[in-house]
Image (spheres, one colour):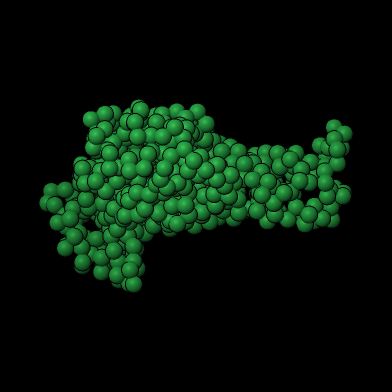
Length: 485
């Protein structure tokens, strides 16, 4: 009901956003031309005249920019949540989303110019088109919200609801409907199958009768949808009522929050015609995970290419200063316990794992993790590459293979997982990463339980924007060597 209505409005918003981005691109061309003529700036490359013909010529000469404007802005608005909770969001939050989108668009377009060597594309034009787009989107979204409010105020597009149930869950649902009154939802009355409830008021709404009275009520009241928010024990009583609504052509919905879940979320899906109730512990959508994977492939490919001189220098330094292989490989646990081989530059003497029992008493970490700040097994080169996380660079091969992601909980050893408490195992539900919240928050200065809690907080609040913020923090940590050992 609300979801379908929301999806329809979101599609309208996206169409309007596309029109606004196109309008802003066109407007920015003429604004830029006017700005340069007034302040006597240098002419913009490929801007032959302030006419439609000049705009077409300019667009063709800056084709990568022209064709990427709309998809990049739509992608950024989607990632940053511009199409989520838009009817209940404050203007301040909406403004923050649009400003973040504008800032990230500059970074994305700058990256495109760098990769494609677009030396003649005007940086001033990018600034003007970014500001123009952001301001136009602010005006468009404010006007759209105002228009929806006026439509609902005048009673148009209103949905009349009959709520079946008066218990705690039903009362919570009624409160939620009131909070979303700007969606055009109106509760006509309530139904309760218990004796003595007829005529009573719950959350300001009157009980109109029992389950058997619903067909009669449908004839006397204007009802668009019947929503069942009932206890599990009532489910076997609903067959006749749902069939009666079906015969009347009245839509019905059954609340599926039948279990008091603390972390997981339920959603209804369909498997070849069989309706299923999914209970998911992650809030990540498939398209978000797809974008995350695409970012992993693109970013790891660029790093492996650009950092190849560092790989070579590090390999030579390891080889000439200590005996043993250049790389260190180790079995780690991935998503839901899948085993994979993790690669690192060797930073310890050959056979360090065999000598671990002699230094176990020096362990400085609590829990099942083993870490020593001044581990005697670390080589001279090893201390340097650990300080600046160079030893982790080969893990971009793991990312390219799909064993790991760039951002995610650090992959544990199988022996560590065996020692996990039950609540700690949930950190395995997402693909492990090279960097994570723990990595940018002090690493070895944080105790084990807090480390696990930080990983779970990351899982519960995950978004692509959070990954981007962690990446920016990682650059600072790598440059300073903060928390590394």
